Image 1 (cartoon, rainbow, N blue to C red):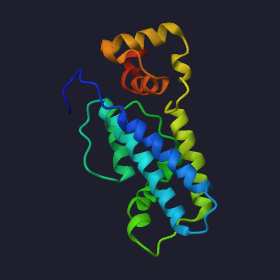
Image 2 (image 1 turned 90 degrees about the vertical axis):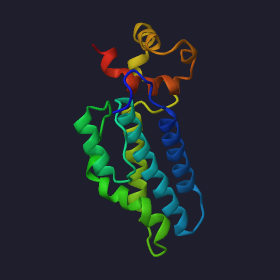
Image 3 (image 1 turned 120 degrees about the horizontal axis):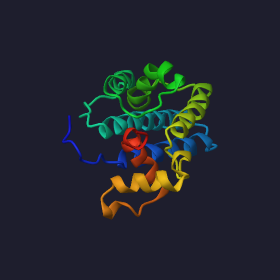
Image 4 (image 1 turned 60 degrees about the horizontal axis):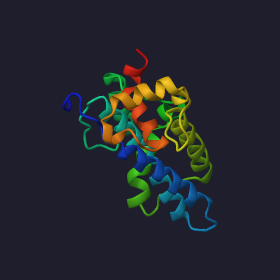
Length: 178
């Protein structure tokens, strides 16, 4: 476990969000090369992995060096991380893990367009359910809740973007809802 009271690094959430945006852009690009699909799949896997690792870090868990989504999801369950794991993410953990290495190193591997299409949609839902978005999450729409969250932050972090506030919510949700 990490040092108690120390803020987790929300940059993992930002990096995950950027991986998702990159995957969507690659998927929409009218380029007839299967490598684009593989690269998009890799970014979707990375997005999912980083969100899970970020949520684990927010509860003080030292995250192992692994890309196995199922293992990370088990750690979320075991450590009470504030993360909504959608059924699709849970059911497709092995497929996503396979995309991490196969899409980069196996030159014969091709991600099916229909699977990628569904993954983009479902991972978008996963991000939305967890408030990983540039629009302020609904839980922080009440001024009282927003001010309470900011009170947990060091002074120099209180003036931040809605995206960052959404990420800090993941870190402090249990304290906020007490």
